[in-house]
Each structure stands twice: as C-alpha cells, then as structure tokens.
Length: 188
Image (cartoon, rainbow, N blue to C red; front, side, top):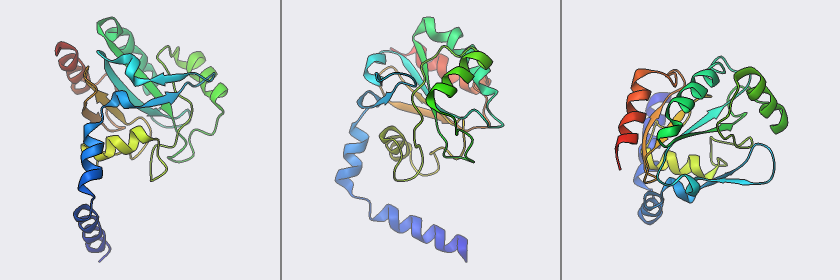
C-alpha cells in the first residue's frame, strides 16, 4: 500500500508541475550557478569554467566512499590540461558524515588525498533547501537523478548543459565515467 501511495503522490506532483517554472529551469545552464569557496569569501562561479567540462561531486570526509577523493584527484590531473575541472561540494546531508568545519575539510582533503581541484563550502544538496544548482540538476535530469548519498557526480559539457550523472557506487576512474568525460572533451 505504501508503494502505491508513493507512486500516486509522485504522479500527482508531476501532473501539477508549473510548465512556466519548468521551462525557466530548463532554459538555465550550469553557468548560472556559483558556490562559495571552501576557504575564504570568494565565489566559484561556474561561468568562469565556460568552455570546459565540469564534474560536480558532493563529498564527505567520513563516508565509505571518501577514498574516491583519490580517484577524483587522479582524473582531475589526467584531464585538466584538456579543459576538465572538478568541483567538490562537501555536504552533511547523508548520515551526518561531514560534520567538520570548512577549514577542517580543506586540511583533511589536502593532507589525506592531496586534493588540488576546487572545493566549495559545505552545502545542503538534498530537499527543498538544497543549493540552487542541485535543485536545477534534479529538475533538469528528472526523477531519480538527485544524489541519494555522498560522492554523487554530475557531468556538465562545455556549453553548460548537464549531460550525465553517476551514483556514489560509480568510482570516478570507472571506464564509463572516463568515456563520458572524454566524449564531452572531444565535443566543441
């Protein structure tokens, strides 16, 4: 009965979506968004990466997937010279696995994994209070594409279009991920 109620509720929510609001969400590109840097007061504007392929990854320091930082740094170094950037977005949304301060997160990432890719300040990435990028990503890619745990990855092409996502279980150095990055990098 619970499954039936859930399905009916989702169908009703979809059928009452405001078409004008939905159209505005789809008109945006990733370049419309920015994040506050992990340390300092500067912003990471995605607009500054126009013409590059971007991967946005929600992270956590005390997760079973935390070791993915190593693979993220590896693919960042492998592809950054070709126009690829990763932005890590720490979040405490799943299992309270990122309770550290921004400064502690920065230190942890550098000391344990040698992270050199940009990192944002800690953000809410799920629910109605989520960072606007995550609300847009969920709306753009549709039902079931929002992060369900830490280390969910979104891939954005050179034109700011959200083109793919990879769940937490998919390692950043997985062939499917690398092929998607290489395909996006090959497009002009």
